[in-house]
Image (tube, rainbow, N blue to C red):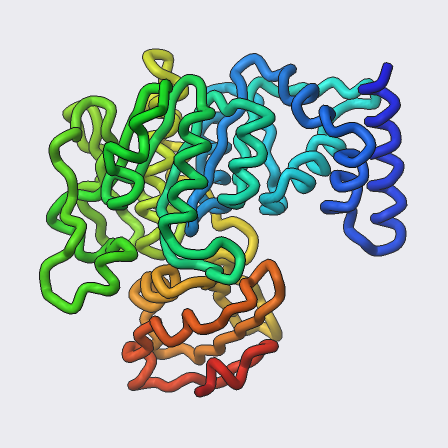
Length: 373
């Protein structure tokens, strides 16, 4: 009865919020959390295949979208927080939208992206069945503090995961024995081949003035539980696992999304096990389109505008490497609201030399003058 009453309240709140122009994204979730703190746990417990958590500094939204579509190709009904609101209130709001009036959730599995700090809070209440950890990079220092503090947060999530975790083998903090020493779940990995490792620097690599990467790929544990990005050209990738290589053409742009695709394949392999329908998975991967605001193309006055999201030095660096500026006008918009990160000092760690030949047509946003400088 309580589940039904709280659900109806949440749906009414969402409707009122939409009528008033609020979009209904997070407010219903915030209110439901306050009146019924166990609503999230109780609703997600209905899922027969459990809960999948995706976290890390960069790539959460796009990778989550990939995983959802790959699992759907395996005939699973997948619930997710599609808006990219990666706080627990955003997940509750998405649940309110998806359940029926009795609070019944008609899905098999949930795939949720979560902000690193909120992932700890979530996993302490609801033990994830599977977790995917993408990377640990310097990002929003005013919120999380130093990089090792972020790694510690994700380590706690790994410890709370019940069945399996997937870690980026090329991230020195995630691939360390320390990170998974207290994890009881099985550990799977993904990464890039040694031949292309230099194009996917870790946070430590970006601060290394020498020519040799400081976090060379760890080949020691690359067994049947490992998924590898062997090579790529443009948007075509060669992804290897189980002793075989697979050619995949992606609709997603950017070399970082090719790495994210490898992570999504690794997680899908772990979840599906021997029941994996490989051809359907690879076909679905080739059809994934960009998430909102992340590599999207939109039309404005018959001009194509390509949106590229950047929010820290590593992401900015990979975006500049992925989208050559020749023949296009480049505009950079930078804000410093809470969701963006208040501390803008990270801009000074980005190498903008690739924009020098063409220049930048405009800078805008709250911190436009910081960017201009």
